[in-house]
Image (tube, rainbow, N blue to C red; front, side, top):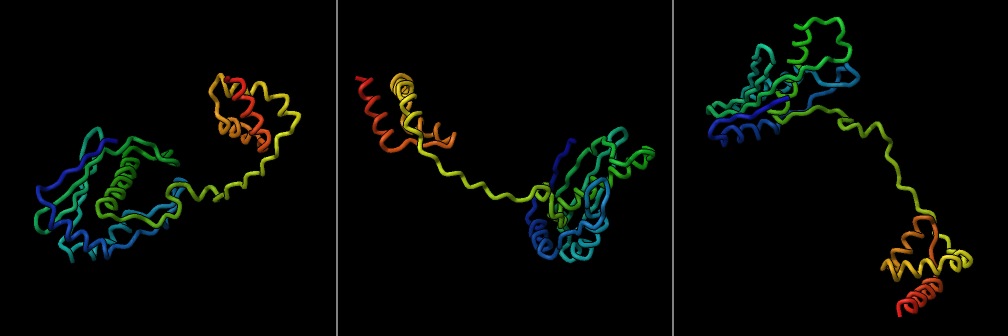
Length: 206
């Protein structure tokens, strides 16, 4: 979906008016359900903004053009002559449940879809959707409490001390790295085992 922005040379008066208007605009309410989700209709955005924009010298106009590709342009203007606009090509998509609709009907649906998003975006409006990023589909989870590490058994220590000593010396592994590997399987060396392993590595290195 291609899109572009355009604007007048100066924007100070428009932005001043838009800032004041945004202090009065409220969010639209997602009270329409279709295609598997809830959304606010375009007319709701217009009804919210219509009594507020003129008080601040603002207006919104939307134009539809194009022959092969449908293009929607939304322009926000100010009484000073300053303006900003956004233009986008409507994506060629088939809506869920659109079977049986003729191309003109589908085109109207797509235009309304784009107008709604552009209208809200150019005024800084949004809707009150509670789950706009699907976070509500997953219940918040509490990180599991890690199980306490068990002391590494003396038998396993004696069986592995030669290989560990070799790793500490030839592979330049640190004691911390070794302890982290053991911690990943729920085990920890005792202070005595760490001392013996260090002594063994120093002796091997000499």
